[in-house]
Length: 481
Image (cartoon, one colour):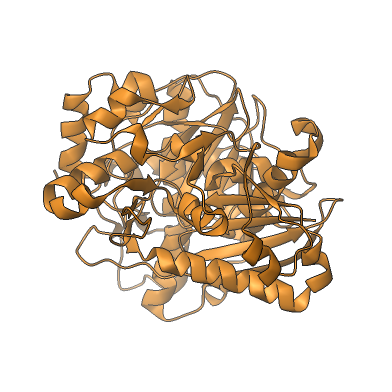
């Protein structure tokens, strides 16, 4: 038996997977995000531990025999968060999250300090990444920066609690701006540019490699007969790729989680940092992922549901299975700023074209379409980088909506495939990495593609209508800085 633990932004999800790769059980617990100032986004690391332990306690209560047989654990997690620890490895402050926009000035400073940043990391300095956050802390919270003895990403902090060791996987580390993406190791020049050294970094391992064993007292707590090995694991999107078998060149997928992304694994690095294309190491050796990333995806639907005080399912139900025409309303999904292609943490969302006749359905449809249009921006900058995407698999919570996937197929004008359990992709991928860390099996034998349950094909007339709408939608973007 294997466990996959996905430390997301909105929830921790844990899945229990058997040797036949069937999900035996899953449990999740919600998390909250704090915004102490406009543009700030933080979480208390204690939340992650409490939520993860609660999901495991629930599995112990309901599936004790299966949990006792767990031999491998994989972790996946939200990327880029800065978790700063003191000499006793205790958090010095709340974690600054991936969608935090406070460090725009520090990004410019970092690129000036280290001109080789883009060539080495494959990425442009953007506020979401980890390194600029440390420059911000050094400037605005110097006493915390001086006390920082260890910098961890969210899931590495959870691993520290689970194992007592500071270890990170290559894929998550490549979202820090401290990793040499080609060498797949820490860059001393990058660390020096932020006033840090390797002494403050965790040890690196590949995602499918062993990292450390679960602490004995925790194995006893959850009734495990052996101390399971914890794999290196992966950032959430690389873990999602492992979960759907996107491990080779030519595969591509779209993630509709709290944030969104359009991603393509590749055996070579083809960077385009000027257009905010992301280059990350994959969770398996010798592979990378090229991605366009948007900061708000399913969180846009959550926002409108909260605003209208109506559950998401009730908002979606009247829309049916597919659109008949674009909404008369346009929506910019920049609720937390945007990455690809604008790299603009200060831009904000917009509803355009509202009239007395505008109803709730038109607004909800516009929200879904706005996210799809933002992913079309990602498609186009990936194409400029030499990455052509002809079809995608959909993962994340948004993949449950057939209407949304139909919109996406027509906006991108490509087939979109859906899996039965696409929303568990990252946790399932983590469980696969936990298996690979101990089994010695070939990666391609374990990381197979699950059966697709439905394919959404673009409708010629509707795809053309969306193509005609896209320039109008793009014209609404106005930089605020």
